[in-house]
Amino acid sequence: MLRNFNLDKTYHFLLISLAFLMPITVAGANLVVVLICILWIFSGAFKSKIQEIIQSKLMLASIIFFCSHVVGLLWTEDLDWGINIIHKMWYFIGLLPILYTIVKKANINLYISAFLLAISFTEIISYLVWFELIEPFRHATVNNPTPFMSHISYNPILAFAIYIVLHKLIFRREMTKFFIMIYSFFALSMSINMFITGGRAGQVAFFVILSVLIFQILDKQRFKALLAVFILTPGIFFIAFQTSSIFNERVNLAIHETINYSENVDSSVGLRILYTLNSFEIIKKNLIFGVGTGDFPSEYYNINQINSPNQPNTTNPHNMYILVLSQLGLIGLFSLLSIFYYQLKISKQASNRFVRDTGFVLPAMFLVIMMSDSYLLGHFTTLLFVFFSSFLYKDFEKN
Image (cartoon, rainbow, N blue to C red; front, side):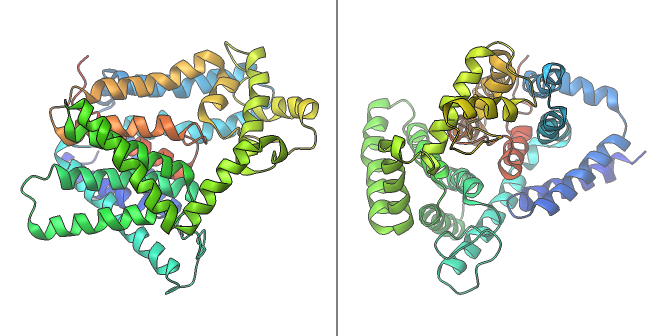
């Protein structure tokens, strides 16, 4: 077995590496995840690890959520697709409980700093592409400069990073003038970057978390907070709408596609509405247990052939709640929401203001963005959710 001192030091290095790599590279982050899991397995002490896991209601909720997908294989006909979904969900039984047992509360600032450093790097590259100082690569275009991931994932992660930067800046403790200037610069530049990239879910998340932050700043002064929200958020929206061509275009496009849904069914918004309407046909017939973990694609195909045969089929309704309801019914939805319930409940118990506030914002943001896509199936956003969940709610839960 590995000696504890060396093991702790190795975990420390790997966790900081994971915090830095997860918004930049799939392969690099996965390599670190594999190394962590291998070390965890071969380091022994399973009794104490398992005891720590089962004492956490959040970890149990995460494990039950995963297991509900496994049980859902019992009444699925398409086992291949069901196993594919299980593979995407393994973070909730594999990685999250493992990370929960090895993260240290004392190292939270280091994890956060590594993550912010990575986001700052991606933001700088984004601006270099936007100003045409470097050639666009991978996912990036000049009009939508998100090189390391699609804008669907980038903007929610950027919104979360903006919240952290603003929170640290506003509630700073013993921060030097130099770091105040650095944080102020990146708070502004990240906020601008939010509106030169095209992720509408992330932009909605930005306004949501900004509103939450205002209430956290003003705390018990609810009327002043509400007034500030009504003044500040529309102001930022108006400035972004007038100055960012891509934001202006995508807002107008979303409004047009929503109002003229029947004439633009094959648009981004139109297809999401269609997926929702057709999926509800599936849900109504399988409300309690769903159609099984792997049968959404085939069931949707059957409904689509009847209701909208000229429109494309889908394996994902682009809504996490509807996907889980379709697959696992109300039981599955309850298991999903229980994760967020315990996150919100545990966050209230934290004495550390940053942990308490951020512990509220993480689930709040995901509860919002999951209405527009299945963000707990995507690599980048799922890893963000799991990694931050592993330490934001540790050592604060009271059983």
